[in-house]
Image (cartoon, rainbow, N blue to C red; front, top):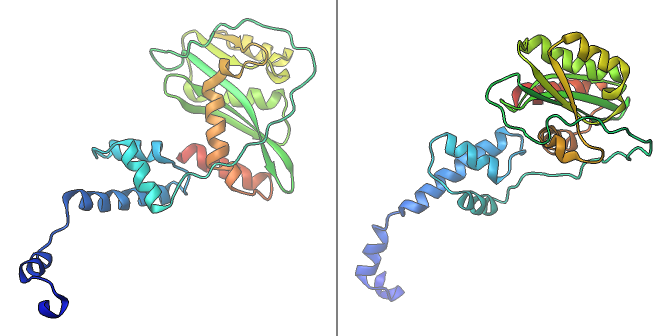
Length: 246
Protein backbone atom coordinates (compact mmCIF):
# COMPACT_ATOMS: atom_id res chain seq x y z
CA UNK A 1 0.00 0.00 0.00
CA UNK A 2 2.86 2.35 0.83
CA UNK A 3 4.38 1.69 -2.60
CA UNK A 4 1.09 2.38 -4.38
CA UNK A 5 0.54 5.63 -2.44
CA UNK A 6 4.24 6.50 -2.72
CA UNK A 7 4.54 6.99 1.03
CA UNK A 8 7.50 5.85 3.08
CA UNK A 9 6.90 3.12 5.63
CA UNK A 10 8.34 5.26 8.42
CA UNK A 11 5.87 8.07 7.66
CA UNK A 12 3.00 5.60 7.56
CA UNK A 13 3.83 4.06 10.95
CA UNK A 14 4.43 7.51 12.44
CA UNK A 15 0.94 8.51 11.29
CA UNK A 16 -0.58 5.38 12.89
CA UNK A 17 0.96 6.25 16.26
CA UNK A 18 0.19 9.96 16.07
CA UNK A 19 -1.37 11.23 19.32
CA UNK A 20 -3.67 14.19 19.87
CA UNK A 21 -1.87 17.27 21.21
CA UNK A 22 -2.48 18.51 24.75
CA UNK A 23 -3.91 21.80 23.48
CA UNK A 24 -6.27 19.99 21.14
CA UNK A 25 -7.56 17.86 24.03
CA UNK A 26 -7.98 20.96 26.20
CA UNK A 27 -9.90 22.77 23.44
CA UNK A 28 -12.25 19.82 23.08
CA UNK A 29 -12.88 19.78 26.84
CA UNK A 30 -13.39 23.56 26.94
CA UNK A 31 -15.77 23.44 23.99
CA UNK A 32 -17.94 20.92 25.84
CA UNK A 33 -17.94 23.06 29.00
CA UNK A 34 -18.67 26.24 27.03
CA UNK A 35 -21.62 24.64 25.23
CA UNK A 36 -22.97 23.29 28.52
CA UNK A 37 -22.83 26.72 30.21
CA UNK A 38 -24.26 28.41 27.09
CA UNK A 39 -27.24 26.04 26.88
CA UNK A 40 -27.90 26.18 30.64
CA UNK A 41 -28.02 29.99 30.45
CA UNK A 42 -30.66 29.70 27.70
CA UNK A 43 -28.10 31.16 25.28
CA UNK A 44 -27.97 34.35 27.34
CA UNK A 45 -24.29 34.32 28.30
CA UNK A 46 -21.56 35.81 26.13
CA UNK A 47 -17.81 35.23 26.40
CA UNK A 48 -17.19 37.36 29.56
CA UNK A 49 -19.81 35.57 31.67
CA UNK A 50 -18.86 32.11 30.34
CA UNK A 51 -15.20 32.90 31.04
CA UNK A 52 -16.08 33.89 34.61
CA UNK A 53 -18.05 30.65 35.09
CA UNK A 54 -15.11 28.57 33.82
CA UNK A 55 -12.67 30.37 36.13
CA UNK A 56 -15.04 29.82 39.06
CA UNK A 57 -14.97 26.11 38.21
CA UNK A 58 -11.17 26.16 38.50
CA UNK A 59 -10.21 26.22 34.82
CA UNK A 60 -7.14 28.27 33.81
CA UNK A 61 -8.36 29.79 30.56
CA UNK A 62 -8.14 33.29 29.12
CA UNK A 63 -11.06 35.37 27.92
CA UNK A 64 -9.55 35.54 24.42
CA UNK A 65 -9.43 31.75 24.22
CA UNK A 66 -13.09 31.53 25.25
CA UNK A 67 -13.92 34.06 22.53
CA UNK A 68 -12.00 32.05 19.90
CA UNK A 69 -13.69 28.79 20.89
CA UNK A 70 -17.16 30.39 20.90
CA UNK A 71 -16.44 31.79 17.45
CA UNK A 72 -15.39 28.31 16.30
CA UNK A 73 -18.62 26.84 17.75
CA UNK A 74 -20.65 29.60 16.09
CA UNK A 75 -22.36 30.75 19.30
CA UNK A 76 -22.80 34.18 20.88
CA UNK A 77 -25.04 36.00 23.32
CA UNK A 78 -28.23 37.24 21.70
CA UNK A 79 -28.64 40.96 22.25
CA UNK A 80 -31.73 42.85 21.07
CA UNK A 81 -32.06 46.62 21.23
CA UNK A 82 -34.21 47.63 24.17
CA UNK A 83 -37.23 49.92 24.15
CA UNK A 84 -36.45 53.52 25.12
CA UNK A 85 -39.44 55.45 26.45
CA UNK A 86 -39.90 59.08 25.51
CA UNK A 87 -38.46 61.44 28.08
CA UNK A 88 -40.89 63.64 29.89
CA UNK A 89 -41.04 67.31 28.97
CA UNK A 90 -42.31 68.22 32.44
CA UNK A 91 -40.06 70.38 34.54
CA UNK A 92 -38.29 68.38 37.25
CA UNK A 93 -37.03 69.98 40.44
CA UNK A 94 -33.50 68.95 41.40
CA UNK A 95 -33.10 67.27 44.80
CA UNK A 96 -30.13 66.32 46.95
CA UNK A 97 -27.84 63.63 45.55
CA UNK A 98 -26.45 62.13 48.76
CA UNK A 99 -24.99 59.07 47.01
CA UNK A 100 -23.13 61.21 44.44
CA UNK A 101 -21.97 58.11 42.49
CA UNK A 102 -20.19 56.67 45.51
CA UNK A 103 -21.29 53.04 45.13
CA UNK A 104 -18.81 51.68 47.70
CA UNK A 105 -20.07 49.97 50.87
CA UNK A 106 -18.58 47.98 53.77
CA UNK A 107 -21.60 45.85 54.65
CA UNK A 108 -25.21 45.15 53.71
CA UNK A 109 -28.06 47.65 54.18
CA UNK A 110 -25.96 50.79 53.84
CA UNK A 111 -26.93 51.85 50.32
CA UNK A 112 -29.86 50.69 48.20
CA UNK A 113 -30.78 51.78 44.69
CA UNK A 114 -34.22 51.53 43.11
CA UNK A 115 -35.82 52.14 39.73
CA UNK A 116 -38.73 51.15 37.45
CA UNK A 117 -38.50 49.59 33.98
CA UNK A 118 -41.01 48.79 31.22
CA UNK A 119 -42.01 45.27 30.07
CA UNK A 120 -44.37 44.69 27.13
CA UNK A 121 -47.08 42.00 26.93
CA UNK A 122 -49.40 41.17 24.04
CA UNK A 123 -52.67 41.24 25.97
CA UNK A 124 -52.02 43.72 28.77
CA UNK A 125 -49.60 45.99 26.86
CA UNK A 126 -47.02 47.78 29.01
CA UNK A 127 -46.38 46.44 32.50
CA UNK A 128 -43.87 47.78 35.00
CA UNK A 129 -41.18 46.28 37.23
CA UNK A 130 -39.78 48.15 40.24
CA UNK A 131 -36.63 46.71 41.78
CA UNK A 132 -34.35 47.44 44.73
CA UNK A 133 -30.69 46.41 44.79
CA UNK A 134 -28.27 46.40 47.73
CA UNK A 135 -24.98 47.92 46.55
CA UNK A 136 -22.97 45.64 48.85
CA UNK A 137 -24.21 42.32 47.45
CA UNK A 138 -25.30 43.71 44.03
CA UNK A 139 -28.40 41.51 44.40
CA UNK A 140 -32.10 42.27 44.01
CA UNK A 141 -33.50 42.38 47.54
CA UNK A 142 -37.01 43.56 46.69
CA UNK A 143 -39.22 43.99 43.64
CA UNK A 144 -42.82 44.49 42.56
CA UNK A 145 -44.61 44.00 39.22
CA UNK A 146 -47.73 45.90 38.16
CA UNK A 147 -49.91 46.98 35.25
CA UNK A 148 -49.63 50.57 36.41
CA UNK A 149 -46.54 52.69 37.01
CA UNK A 150 -47.56 54.53 40.13
CA UNK A 151 -46.30 55.38 43.60
CA UNK A 152 -47.81 52.18 45.04
CA UNK A 153 -45.52 50.13 42.80
CA UNK A 154 -42.44 52.02 43.96
CA UNK A 155 -43.45 51.67 47.62
CA UNK A 156 -44.20 47.93 47.33
CA UNK A 157 -40.73 47.21 45.96
CA UNK A 158 -39.02 49.13 48.77
CA UNK A 159 -41.37 47.64 51.39
CA UNK A 160 -40.55 44.11 50.19
CA UNK A 161 -36.84 44.89 50.49
CA UNK A 162 -37.30 46.46 53.93
CA UNK A 163 -39.29 43.52 55.28
CA UNK A 164 -36.76 41.04 53.93
CA UNK A 165 -33.59 42.83 55.04
CA UNK A 166 -34.84 44.53 58.22
CA UNK A 167 -32.11 47.23 58.19
CA UNK A 168 -31.19 48.55 61.63
CA UNK A 169 -28.75 51.39 60.94
CA UNK A 170 -28.95 54.45 58.74
CA UNK A 171 -29.70 53.59 55.13
CA UNK A 172 -29.39 55.61 51.90
CA UNK A 173 -32.05 54.85 49.28
CA UNK A 174 -31.18 56.27 45.86
CA UNK A 175 -33.64 56.77 43.00
CA UNK A 176 -34.19 58.97 39.98
CA UNK A 177 -36.46 62.01 39.90
CA UNK A 178 -39.49 60.10 38.62
CA UNK A 179 -42.86 61.27 39.90
CA UNK A 180 -43.33 57.97 41.75
CA UNK A 181 -40.28 58.74 43.93
CA UNK A 182 -40.81 62.49 44.35
CA UNK A 183 -44.48 62.16 45.28
CA UNK A 184 -45.70 63.20 48.71
CA UNK A 185 -46.92 59.68 49.41
CA UNK A 186 -43.49 58.15 48.77
CA UNK A 187 -41.79 60.79 50.89
CA UNK A 188 -44.21 60.09 53.73
CA UNK A 189 -43.43 56.37 53.46
CA UNK A 190 -39.67 57.07 53.67
CA UNK A 191 -40.13 59.30 56.71
CA UNK A 192 -42.25 56.64 58.43
CA UNK A 193 -39.29 54.23 58.47
CA UNK A 194 -37.11 56.59 60.47
CA UNK A 195 -33.72 55.32 59.27
CA UNK A 196 -33.87 55.98 55.50
CA UNK A 197 -32.31 58.99 53.77
CA UNK A 198 -33.58 59.52 50.23
CA UNK A 199 -30.99 60.40 47.58
CA UNK A 200 -31.84 61.47 44.03
CA UNK A 201 -30.04 61.33 40.68
CA UNK A 202 -29.49 64.58 38.84
CA UNK A 203 -31.93 65.22 36.00
CA UNK A 204 -30.96 63.32 32.85
CA UNK A 205 -28.01 61.52 34.51
CA UNK A 206 -28.54 57.73 34.36
CA UNK A 207 -24.92 57.23 35.49
CA UNK A 208 -25.97 58.47 38.95
CA UNK A 209 -27.94 55.21 39.25
CA UNK A 210 -25.66 53.09 37.06
CA UNK A 211 -25.89 49.84 39.07
CA UNK A 212 -29.62 49.36 38.72
CA UNK A 213 -29.59 50.69 35.14
CA UNK A 214 -27.06 47.93 34.39
CA UNK A 215 -29.26 45.28 35.99
CA UNK A 216 -32.31 46.35 33.99
CA UNK A 217 -30.21 46.33 30.80
CA UNK A 218 -29.11 42.73 31.53
CA UNK A 219 -32.70 41.74 32.30
CA UNK A 220 -33.82 43.09 28.93
CA UNK A 221 -30.97 41.54 26.93
CA UNK A 222 -30.96 38.16 28.64
CA UNK A 223 -34.70 37.59 29.15
CA UNK A 224 -37.30 40.18 28.15
CA UNK A 225 -36.14 40.96 24.61
CA UNK A 226 -35.80 37.26 23.80
CA UNK A 227 -39.40 36.41 24.66
CA UNK A 228 -42.95 37.37 23.78
CA UNK A 229 -45.18 37.49 26.86
CA UNK A 230 -48.87 36.83 26.25
CA UNK A 231 -50.10 38.61 29.34
CA UNK A 232 -49.22 40.07 32.73
CA UNK A 233 -49.10 36.70 34.53
CA UNK A 234 -46.81 35.14 31.92
CA UNK A 235 -44.40 38.06 32.22
CA UNK A 236 -44.55 38.01 36.01
CA UNK A 237 -43.60 34.33 36.12
CA UNK A 238 -40.69 34.85 33.72
CA UNK A 239 -39.40 37.82 35.72
CA UNK A 240 -39.71 35.87 38.96
CA UNK A 241 -37.70 33.00 37.48
CA UNK A 242 -35.00 35.33 36.15
CA UNK A 243 -34.53 37.24 39.40
CA UNK A 244 -34.75 34.26 41.75
CA UNK A 245 -32.71 31.86 39.59
CA UNK A 246 -30.24 34.09 37.77
